[in-house]
Image 1 (spheres, rainbow, N blue to C red):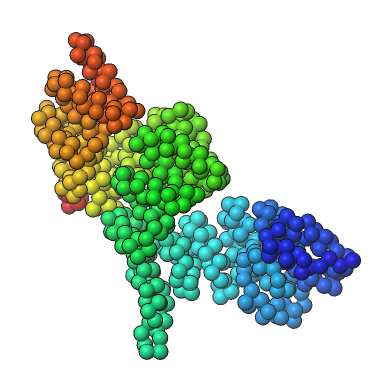
Image 2 (image 1 turned 180 degrees about the vertical axis):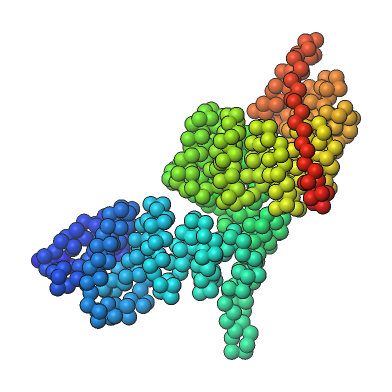
Length: 559
């Protein structure tokens, strides 16, 4: 009795994969198909069953079935194989394509590679893909090969594959982002966009418009990849005017703002995205980190609850869970961060979160490994900041200085990078004058950078210039309602025995952020002082001298 093959194809087309899998077991075991006399029919039936298994995410079974199909394909008579290749020219390589018999060998190899990739067996996937001739590869094949080469750190062949994608399909945004992150210049990406002139010799207006915004998009991604965050934000903002409420652009802007410390602006954009589409998960772990910084626990709880209800298998969800659990249970938070990395070993926020957790657990030697992993994937400001903190915690000042200088060279227009070098110099008494210069340079570059102002004020206090510290901080008080600013002012006033002024600012800090630990501890200390009790003075850290004359010339140039 014959099993109707067209029914199998229909079930697959309708997405009824479980039913297709069950019917497929009848199809491949049918006695009406003789494997000896009709190997092409047997191969086709096995491929259909493999497609059902692929969609059911039974990847190992799918691989086994596809490979059986390929084995029967090798028994095809040559003339049948020739007809196969001709008839399959227009057939899609997606596992959704089922209808044109018999099988296309390259398609099946691609499906086997897709299964291996889903299992994170990238080496086996790449071996399958390399068996497909380059001229026979379509968009999906080139995209998969680009990813696989990139994961195996083979940059040149990865770039070649992504270039092929854009030559034929310029709107493949994924390929544009990948090329930018692999270091390809914007002008070289733009040259890949096809120029199709009309009969008059000029490109049609719709093509011109497409080319224009695609060029801007490529330029924006290249700016971000090269750490030119300011230029990238300007280009994304220009695109947002052309495409208002574009969720992808809003998310890209918010992500960059979070990286460079524009936390309030980033939160506004993340909230705007959620108001447009409350089911977005992309970059929501970045939003969770910002909510934690703002100590907005109610919003953080709601965000994590929403993400768990949308898709509890995404790495962003586990990073958000890690953020939520950090205050309650650091080890539990760490397990969530590690789970996010197991789901996607290229998920940068997972490594950033893991590094920060190990630092808070006083394990800088392990934290440094996490920050290095993040840096290898994308060397942004946070990975540099994490490395510097790790090295300073281990008293490895030279290594900290090297990491900070690398950040400064990678981001010469970043006030945050300048401050990072200043922080290293400020960690020892002999470097305070250098630290002061870097903090002042950061403020000249970005006058509204509160972090540099707070660090410079701290230097003033250490060197006994409390009046200068107060004047500096009060200038920022006019424009910033920030709890850390009030805490620093309170500390300066307490150090100069102006206890009532200190009390006012500690209370102001706690009104803004009731969970501010520095304000709580400072207020407790202040209350003891006001009662006439002299609290124990903090232990002074041993000086850690840095002798690094070779790098001074580089620093002078960068300043």
